[in-house]
Length: 528
Image (cartoon, rainbow, N blue to C red):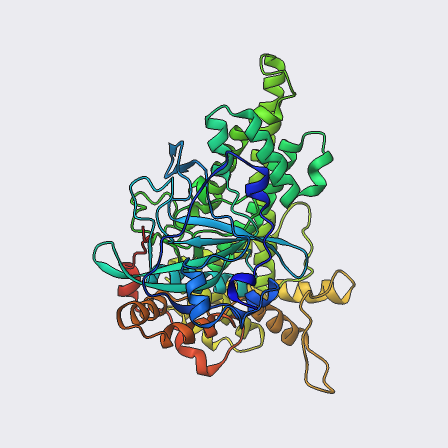
């Protein structure tokens, strides 16, 4: 099979949503070269990964040889960017090439990023550089390994030309895979134009693609809003529990599918601090780590506004009582978000603390208080977020030395440890009395019975990663690839990020925090 025949496209977006995009073509690349091919992902998509490798694959992924059945389009969308509304954004440097159905029958977008100007480029060059595209690979694959919904990179191809940012950089095209590229901003685009007909088509398409069970709901638009709110609550809770900072949570970067999208100015927090900001363009801290849940709710309110014409009963736009009911219904969904988020966050924190069956009594959740106090300790003592949680698993196994070593004053940790161990004992009692069981069973040695401590430690290690994309290691790998053409550091880091839970001494350098002085001045960039 040739690379151009490897994709069996079914382009529903282009077919069903005329007027929601502009046709486009990738710019030719003078010297395409394949830098990365995600063979595992290609196989999951039902593609022939061998056919996609080599010079022919490089030509395809650089945009020089489009796959059979491809229908390149730039999608239209609007968006609130740092709180200010832009009625027309759209894919300024991306093209949706087509959609494929994977081996499980799930539909996925295949899109280029950095393939040149489109109708929505707004004066930009539409290009991308090697470093930011390889960053998308590293962060996306790390998120996937952590079990967090995400878009993923199928390939990165160098173009053989230079792109200009602050200086000349080697160009590249990323091939991104997503459940869809539908965004809050997609709905905003048509709402801003009072184009209710296309807004309805978009709603019907989104429901058919992501929530087909909602098609017969009494109020499909309201039901979709609720579904998106639930997905985003779970997603952001997962971000918070691993210390991920998106960096640019504009409404055009919030998906309807609940996948993380756009790994531009993103990073993982090291020393725990809710005010942490790494984005070079977030001067006011709007998208700081601790603000992410609130911003997600704000974005959902913008989706509710866009959907309001469809939440209203037909032909009731001038009925004041009907408008008030529609606004009240939508507002109720938005106001439910904090509860949805808190439920997801607390479930994750209970697992991270090793509490598997401890009941909540009379509305009080001692695990939530314990988690809040733990994070306050990490903040006060500037402890690394990832290692703080990870070494708590060592303490569960009976070795408190690693976690105590993270604190400049280990004695400050003792009162909290006493409370935690008391809750762990109560949790063990709840398990043995039939109150529940570990969702992650321990694996004792042959002929041995797992102790509660062993079971707890193993369960905690399965949810508290040892390896995350440490900022200095990411920059080290990207600099080697971009400036010296050396992909070795990138490939080794990628291999480590794909096994975040395993304590492997050979990978210890990838678990080490950066020097504090580096982290304090670290900034990330969007690459446009």
